[in-house]
Image (cartoon, rainbow, N blue to C red; front, side, top):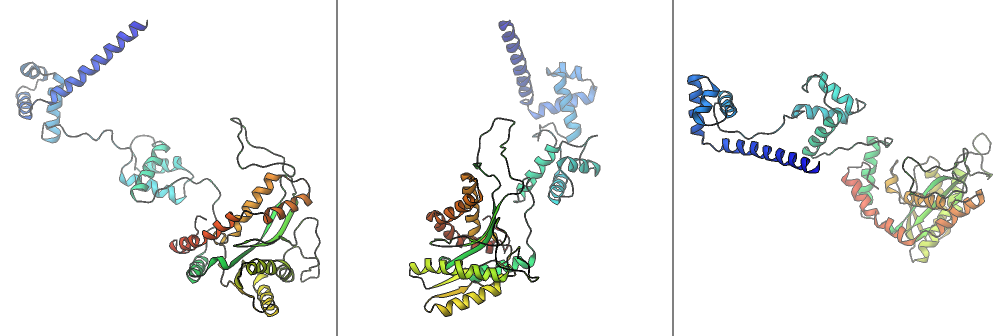
Length: 394
């Protein structure tokens, strides 16, 4: 049986080789001989008769006659292969439709192209053909495209873009190591008693599943980082199981951050601990950064002014004009991501253990990590300027 298969295979290969050889040999005939063959056919209009007269196959005679009638020459033209499924105009249209977002996917784009008459045939081209031609056209234009399946990112308003650009230009010559970055974060104990790893290997068809609390406990806190380390987290309203003496304008216990509570955060934790880290390294003048929460600017100005008056020789300056919606410029955002990952990995059981784990993680944050973050600040400012104020990769 195997010998028979091999014999058939050898026979197929030999026939294929002969066909290729016959084609090659026929095209090696000089063009003036082909012209004689064409003239002979015009005289008798019989392929078989001309084939016998010149000793070539009937198929070759027919091919040269048709070539002469179509192109006016018997010379073999270079073939471009199969005709393109989408022309240049259709490829441009496919690219614009995919980027425009009006259509739900490449299949809808294929149907629309067929409806507009930009593709041939009785049915639309396959969606993969649309994607292939659109991606190729995008590369030719120097603007490669890719599918994005996550939730859309928050788009910056033009006013915010200009504020970011103006801020980066104003601070690009400043020493960023003299900045203290602050922010508030609310961390939830979503997986009590469970260790959550960033990567977990599972069998095919299975996902990583763990028990998650429906109403998780939360630790709402403020903290700050300097080039030399992080402050102790300061718990504020919103932390599970804690009561605060701060009230809202209606005289009820505040459920959100008030100006008075933020002043307490500055006075008791952020300013003194940041200043202690700078002073321990021989720095007497530094800058305090904060976000644009409505309760922050007035409270910070009052507390910083009071601090400078009470501590001659130590000067704190508030970093003005911090642009809104700029987490890529605030180094502490990376610290929050690190803390969250470490806490989930530890998997504490009770709320007290959860809070203590956060405190310990901030206290023992790796110094090389802090230094690398501060080293990236110049690149962040530069990237923001190069992007004309738009979001960066950080």
